[in-house]
Length: 242
Ligand code: SF4
Image (cartoon, rainbow, N blue to C red; front, side, top):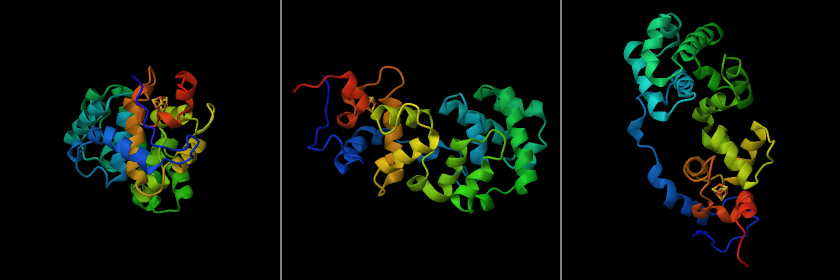
């Protein structure tokens, strides 16, 4: 059975209505991550966040955190310590996260460049104007739009920066907020405009959970999606009764 959260709204609305935000909250609030899931000190230290982002590539959240804890048990998570770390020991420390050969090399290289370019300190870079900070972060090896934006959320929050990953990319395209061939910046702008500014941090998180749990890459569960009323993909694939 298709559940439609038809709350008397205009199907062509360009921003999310508070009633739909409440429906998202009801459905995805319980999926929210517990505060203690992440290692201590992670959110306040941009270098640690870069390292966990490298560890998160092509693996699950659980394995990524396991690898990070393995690394933290063996090394201080600082550019100095990781730049001089023994490659084999690095590999062993992060083995549980998968792709440990590639990731250990990447971590070492990144640490060296953070030392050389920024004297080991990323916080001053993050306090630069947004575009300038992003440009500088993207000079680091392996740091693309998404990782740079993850770091920028520390300064600017999700109110101004939404790091576009595969989930947001899929959701924005299916909703019809952007065309199928839209690029990173376009998708980010469209999502920012779609989510009302108040509570944008929280609502961006709810939309990410929707994409992960409901708007799945294969077999999206449109029949239970809280925003199916607005969705271009759903309109194409699920004929409506008159
Ligand atoms: S209606 Fe379907 S395709 Fe559209 S956002 Fe919801 S789950 Fe995704």
